[in-house]
Image (cartoon, rainbow, N blue to C red; front, top):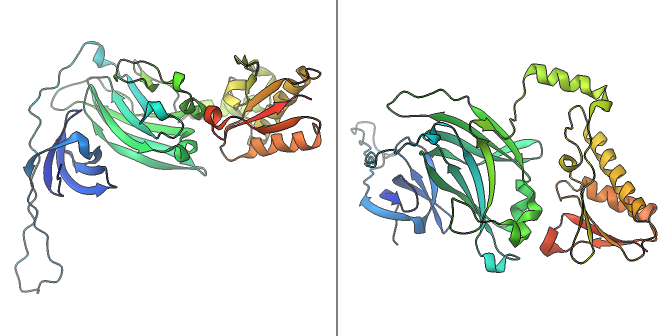
Amino acid sequence: MNIKVGDKVRFLNSVGGGIVRSFKGKDQVLVEDADGFEVPALIRECVVVGEGTMQVHSTTQPKTQAPIEVKMAKPEPDELPIVETREGERLNIYLAYLPVDPKALTDSGYEAYFINDSNYFLYYNYMNRENNSWYSRSHGVIEPNTQVFLEEFGKEHLNDLERICVQLIAFKKDKPYALKNAISVELRLDTVKFYKLHCFRPNEFFDDDALVYPVVTNDLPERELLVSSAELQQAMQEKARVDRREPKKVQKKQAADGIVEVDLHINQLLDTTAGMSNADMLEYQLEKFHETLKSFAGKKGQKVVFIHGKGDGVLRKAIETELKTKYKQYYYQDASFREYGFGATMVTIK
């Protein structure tokens, strides 16, 4: 399909369309919608419905020359009415990830989608965290009861998605509606699941299996990023009263081949990390590491996989240091890349 800058297009797999403003790589275009937002879209999911016209103001014209008028083709308003449902008056928002080629998951990239299962329009901003800062990966407006494509990425970028955040503002056009609070939700993705085909499951949004993460369920955010001053004060008080924390039991999963999996992600070990510094959390994770190896002492040949994630590599380096100094008799190596990526270490008891 020959698409040019300035063409008017409609989306095939979702409601909406607009004017093509620029190209993004070989497969995507940026489409300016009726609200003036530039929305990324796959070229194969766009159909040209008219050619736009755009005249450019010349910056080199003489001062005595009359200014050239800039004319742009304006997208026509959507003809399809918004169909509302009774249950759609509550916000139900999801993120979904699908492998590009499920039959070759080891080498496949992934597609990310945003799902608005409600009667509200949404301003959204989809971000990831890097080096204590947030980076916007996609933003725009999504119509009611619609899903939009966000991005396609490769396995080399999976670790960038361990911490993501979605900001939302809900509204309706040309009609009264119930006010919804602005929402900012932070999520932690278990990137190990992206390497396991069975983690992609049937769902109600796609014909293909997908990893679906709820962001808002019946108006309730999964986890709000912002906290009130009262909650912050309470967290500071909890730092002095560590006994109030209720640690979870270490998750030990026995695989079919006898390998034991131990997830050392801090959110799998503790219900809350309020008041804990990074050093406190690392110390707690290493305590669980030592407890696990102690429990398997004497079981010669037992293999234990410690899932630590890649992240900044701090926990991984700490584990390797402990193995080199306190457990020299044990053999260790990177766990299966196909199963865990670079986020796990396998220890063999000797």
